[in-house]
Length: 268
Length: 347
Image (cartoon, rainbow over all chains, first blue to last red; front, side, top):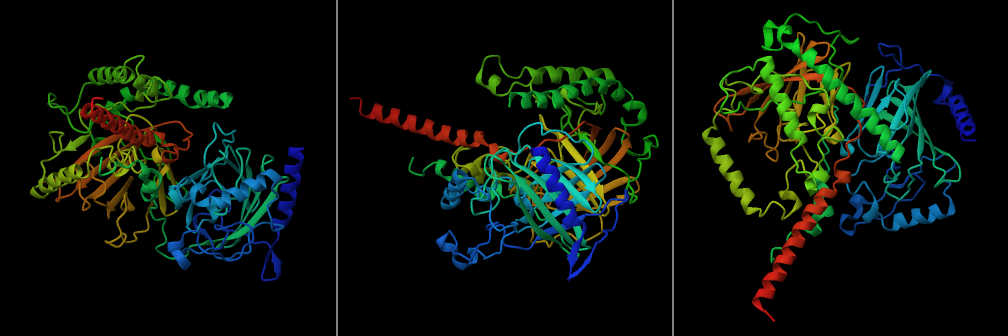
């Protein structure tokens, strides 16, 4: 059943992706090649959307922190989900709502925890791709997160982790990354959308032009969702000549938040 | 779950032990291959090149070593014989495996014969040097400059004024806080475990992933200027270029929050990576910091090919140790206060 489903999804995604609509004109873009003849995705990329607040369509809303006023208010966004909403199972939807209500306490981003997949790809920070024939590395600004995509040594995740275990392969113009072995600690956004450790993400990266990647991911987690669902967005190349991934060692920024209550009181 | 755990142990630790054994004969050749002396006398090994023409440094490497940064006070020579070096490694390995007393809490927490915590279970280059420091020739850190002495005193005073080591998270060592460890550097030096690195190259970049703290340096090779001088980072601003077969990386823009052997934020670090054999990189670094030392100093560490994969090191996310350390200190204080109160009113 699961195998069949995966096959069907892969096939339908393959069809949609082979042809990319650009400016109303339908054509296939052929990316420049690396030395080993694969589409060259080396570069610094960044999503430009509001999904980091909420991957579902949402209106602007006040900041959850009074003092931050408009500076940290939620930007409205149209969402990145095919079909608009996440197909939660009823109990899971209740948990999502609870997560949302307690997001200042529960959102792993606030604690500088590794962001997981796919969230890392649409946080409001750039990430860099270093591409080789056997490994493709994705290095993220946030928390210095890193993913290794194994292009030949495909294997099952040896243990659960925050960023998962990623096996990749090429389908023509598309890099397909199959990631499992997640823990249940990461979220999809700041709105409490979540998953379990049964999460399975299949991502497809396809160059839409020299400076755009079409990013699509199919998300499957039978513990939380009633069916697999799909997100899609564009990733934009950071074209500044001096673009670089800056250090964002955020542990230092959250220590007082996490451990401050254990500080020795001056009176003692 | 248990099954997965066994896979991990089987996949990572056991082959590592095999690598250590096979390291011995290879390391024995090091002397004749020129690893004994640095630089020009090395027999001409030419690294393969990446498709964009860089000497190929890519792979999984380890800088694990038992060789101390500074030469021990009772040692006067620059090199051990091979027999002496092997004997010292063996002794260090057995001490490391037995550094906790059986049955004690530390023994349960850190069983160094398990999970690759003991360095000798993994790949390690045999280093004949008696210290990692190669210059000054006495193998020891140069003396502190006047400014360096003043700053060391200021730092000690500041530490004292912040209170006890467990009064607040900010008083704990950077490593325990999962912010920066000696494996990350800069410069990158081995510790007791997880001394594993992955190097990858793409046109215009060399990327070094340090297993510890999943820390990545993406070193640009395009000759771009350093970050503006007011932009300071824990690992600084690093820029690389090739000098023949050697990758040269210059690091500046460091912060005074991190002191390497007492260094200041003005430290300028030059690191050199040279592939000297199929399975070896020579890692050299020079520290220039007149704000700290009376002269520059240099060290050299052999890196050896290791086996992957490198697994995620989510240090901060699982830092129960930090919580327990601080909570334990507060509990101790509470108990001491209660006992003191009892003494004051003995009813």
